[in-house]
Length: 152
Image (cartoon, rainbow, N blue to C red; front, top):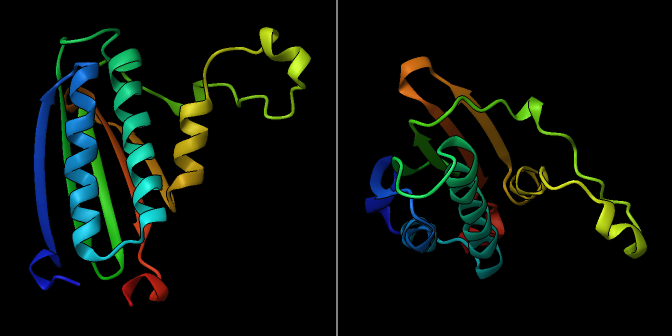
């Protein structure tokens, strides 16, 4: 583990454009890699970040280049914490229906769109928390814990 990253916060901001999401993912994954996460965990972190940023553009802003996506990561103790904030429309994850994960292939055309991104984030990360802070916008906090095996 690179000790220069312990208890430090790293920040990055991009315009809300789909082509720029990769930059957020690279920024976060580079930090997670430097503190020692496995390739499997890096993939999970990258996918969760991609889903989160896509949701900001689609749902908080309702389209591209309307606002900024601000990202921070911090590694403290055994917790790698990613915070994504935006100034878009308030988001309440309770308003998103649970995805139908038991649909048969024949029913795929009847499935409702939505909810899979949140489902993925919750299954890929150890903790996922959503906050709406009035005039400070939406804040998503995702945590991935470093296991003893990953530290080796």
